[in-house]
Length: 261
Length: 236
Image 1 (spheres, rainbow over the protein chains, first blue to last red):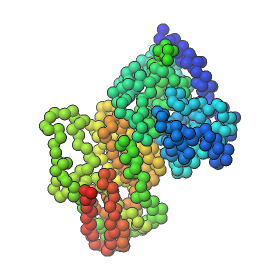
Image 2: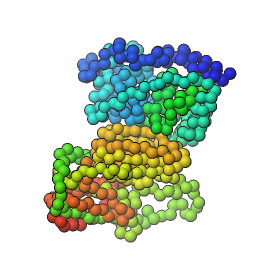
Image 3: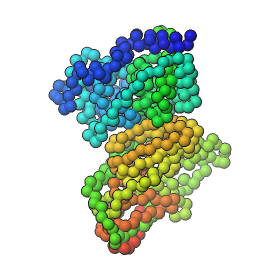
């Protein structure tokens, strides 16, 4: 029974959320082909940033726009070059495609919307503007992206293995809670690099911030989320263990609970 | 809030980038030995807050923010360095990596001063998960989860002052001070430091402490002589 249930869940969620469906096809090659990301700051990019981004992220990219006060999680402060959703290793700068992906698909459970009202070219033109806010892009280069291998088949065994890692090896429950509701014992005291309180993610909602596909969840363990307490487990877990943990985390989604919300 | 404070400490301009440092053989070098003191009110520091109650081990570990010797008011974990030296001894990075260990939810040692280009090994000696989290800008930041007996090797290439934190145990932190010339030292438990093989001349000697900030003094080095320097932090 179990593996079938899991498969149907993975299937259900990727089918229902339009964003994740597109992600399963693989967004990186698509963006590389279709959109030409400029390397220099353009007038068009500056205007787009000022009109659509600066109300929250601030005119100078410090995450202190006039609307930022009422938001939690706070709009990102671009001056440190710390981007949450990347395909690059922990601490590394993001690739242009990573930034483009976040702009295009937004961040669920936050005030960052998918910016599909902008054209592809407008979205791409903002990227050099964002990079110009941080000196880090001048000093360092993004590390090469992590390539996600073939997913192992979800089964009862991989879920059980993942549960063991979640509860014993990495003690994910300390922040994310035993049932994955983001209510672990250390959850209350977490704050991000900018000193703002931050909540560990509640897996039961099923709206993963970096994307719902299993390869997205897999990437989050490997890359961590820069600027937040979520570390990278690149050194701790083997490839197979990370897939097991992915399957367990996906099995924590409770779609029936979230229908009412 | 600790994140904010730490960040303000990191950025000021005392991370001097000496781009033009030439390596020469120093034959008639002088040395500096000295002492860093904190002339604050030690009575408050010696208060026994636990009042002989048996507390869990994590709450009894002493905060290492301000470690002052009771004997001579010497200040531990201050980093003394020459900031404006342009030529001197070889910049040799240690082949045996310096170690920062996490034991009983505490980073040991609390402050490590290294030359740019040195690799540091960060260990986990506790049978539970720790994270090693930095938020540097010039050096690549990282945030890695570590389990028992894990060893992380990280190379630090640019001069910067970096704070290491653990997100699961919020109380603990450590500092890595990266300098771009080999003339530096960290004070011992009685506040003593020693820097040798300095080519004769006049230099700026600077001391950094995480709580008390920095002090600067000019020092003249004579060939094959030892200069004695004392830094005093007053409480105000």
